[in-house]
Image (tube, rainbow, N blue to C red; front, top):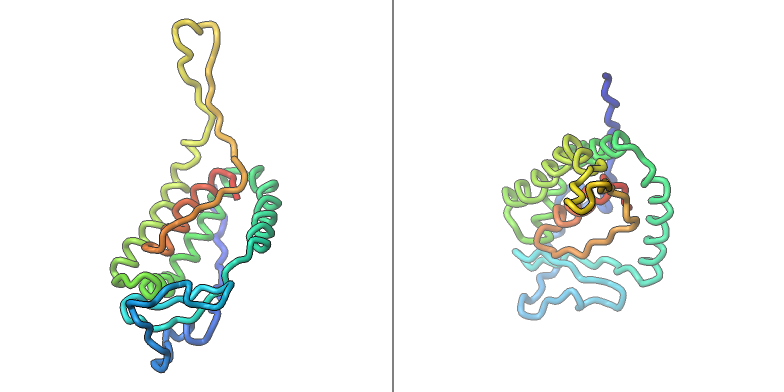
Length: 197
C-alpha cells in the first residue's frame, strides 16, 4: 500500500527577535526576589527567562469569554473529528510529527527560555519524548482503542461483555510549566488520537 504524503506546516514566528533568536540586551532584568507573573497589567502575564531574569515581555491572558469561545470552536470541530478514521488520525499525527521535527531548534530554544533548562534537557525531555509518544500512537494506538470482549464471569455464562472506547468530546489539560512543550502535547496527542478535541 502507498502511504499518504505528509504535508509540511510552515510556522510563522511572532516577532523578529524570535525568528533570529536574538533578544535586545537592553531588556530589563527582573529582581528574582520580586518577580511574579502577576506583575503585569490586568489581563496580561509577565514572562522572563528564569536563568538570566531577562524580561521577555507580556502575553495576553484569555478572558473567560475567550476561553468559552475557544471551547465552543473545539466542540464544533470535535463533532466531525470524532467520526474520523484511525488512518486520518495517524495522518494528522504524522503531519504534527513532521512539524515538530522541522522546528525542533525553535522548540528547544523557547523551552529553554521559558523554563531555564539546558538545551540537552529540552531536546531529550521535550522534543524526543513527544515524538516518541506520537510514533507509538501512530504504530500501536489503534490496537488499544478497538472493542474487546471480556470474561463475564461464571454466573453470566449466557452473556457476553464487551468494552468499547468512544471519544468523550472536549478534553482540557492544566499542566505545569517545567516542561512547557511536552506537558501540553502529552495529553493533547493521546486525546486527539482517541477522537477528542
